[in-house]
Image 1: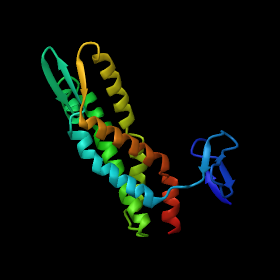
Image 2: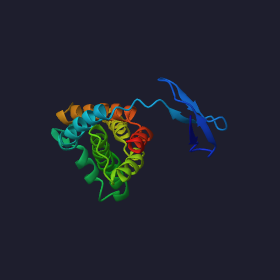
Image 3: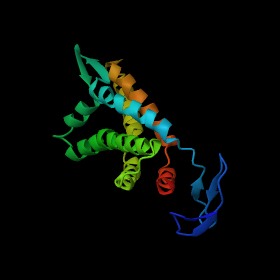
Image 4: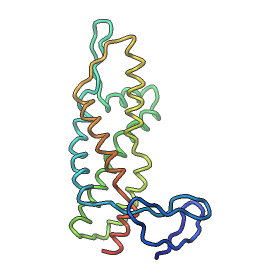
Length: 197
């Protein structure tokens, strides 16, 4: 048994080893305080490297082409953010940070920490990387950008002809792999491996 402090109500609980598929909940507030750790750093490392390789084509290749009044315009994720700088600089910064900077840094941090744990290398900066990863996971919002892109395409579909470009397929692949990484990654599990390693 180990002692775990609930992050929601600060109650200290004794938790046994959790079987696969089960979670331990706080007896006071009923929030999950511990779940079975199935995070495999080697698998997460492979997924992270794949996602990092997809970043450049997903961000730089055109996502959609819009044909309106005889003119065809292509746009990618970065152009969309930079076009808003003059009209709404705060919105442009938030889009740039949540859709480009935070996901890129998060994937880099997860890849670095996964590589360290896979090869049993525990440098002094690893705790900082794990803390940064936990913060960036709250700010990485690729799926929110995808939803907003779908809403925009749905609204433009009546007024213009839309063509899906190669960047959209790279972005969808990046989104799927990103969701796989987030579903498998456990910051708590990585901390345990670091402490026990």
